[in-house]
Image (cartoon, rainbow, N blue to C red; front, side, top):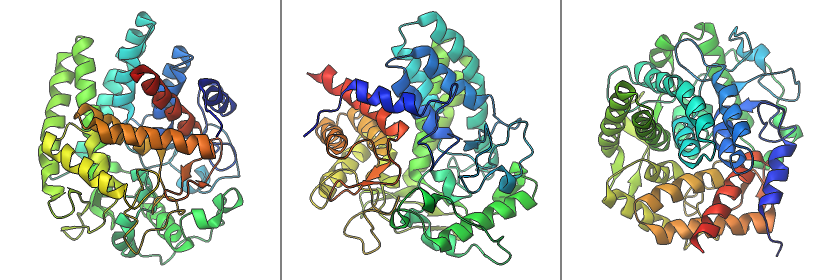
Length: 425
């Protein structure tokens, strides 16, 4: 079995480096993606701290005036990806998409700051990013939680980062596809169609884009207008963790107003998350806000909630649930329960294991002193890379590499896992 080292990870990240941002992988994803960049910066910091800060700065340079940070920035033309800027039509100085992605920036920036060797650089860059990240968080609560419940909704499956998760099936079926523009997918030129979302799902993805585009991308109106409104516990957990981390960072930088506001958001959010807990499933469940019902889907979204500062007993229950999954999966953590008839171990987010999710779950469980399960997740992750390379994601039963290859954030997370493993020795 080959041994993966830091140099292997660095080579992948450098190969996907465009100068002031990285692409997830050439061909399949030729632009800058939001949460990809934030997590990539964690890896870059191991060998070039200044470059890591630049990665996040480049993303936030394209923040919208209302605070939203888009999920894609189209820095240059590339016809190899659909939908491109000609579909989104957001009318930005640098073209962007019109939706967002999981807000990991607060977590990533605090981690970069606390590990920094160049303290003056870290303070300068973190201080500049602090109000911009806070503005993004506040945008979520203003535009995606208009009733003040403490929980925010995603309005498009792509916002979740878990595009074709089983969680969205029923809600997505209610999205009308009448009048959807004819289109040609580009993803199938770069990846096995059996690993990707279906054509029917894509039609609904584009239907939502067309709806929002027709409303002029006015974020204050989209929540009411969207037929797809789902509260994802994993997405919310990332937001609450980032709020808590941003509060701690603001304290260190002498910004008490931001600290107080961000900490209150995190506390209120974690309390509200309790309404999504299922004793029967021993995890959090998604909630379909359009019809006011919880979604019976045992996905990794409900386990990812461990990333937030949830109650200790909840973290222990999630750890026990993951131990159960270890009995039916060779590699933790599958993105859906393999015993569910809807599970598909090779199709994107309907079963495969993703290292970025493993990283966040392991981090949260380790903080909650559930170290046995956290260490198993790290060990499985490193074993996947050693056996199958830096894939976008993996079949949790066979370890088969799926999706794109030589993937940037997989290499970045591998560096994080290698560093933690070496530190534990």
